[in-house]
Length: 66
Image 1 (cartoon, rainbow, N blue to C red):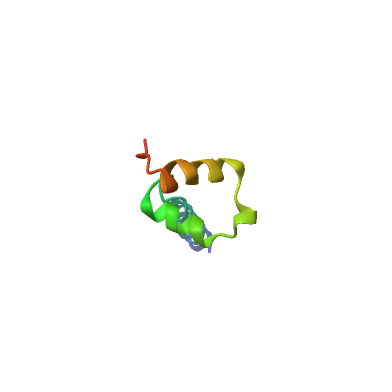
Image 2 (image 1 turned 120 degrees about the horizontal axis):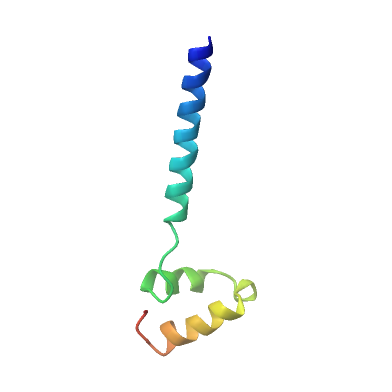
């Protein structure tokens, strides 16, 4: 019974770590074409000041992402 409990905890920890790793890799790089598209789909009232500035810099004026 104790061995089964350790096995379940081990599997759950692997699933948790994998989920966090996959979810953190989902956001596109600021200034990329995918980022511009994602921001255009987001309501402008929900943009932060940094997002607005970056959108103007990269998506409107065409600066290259760093």
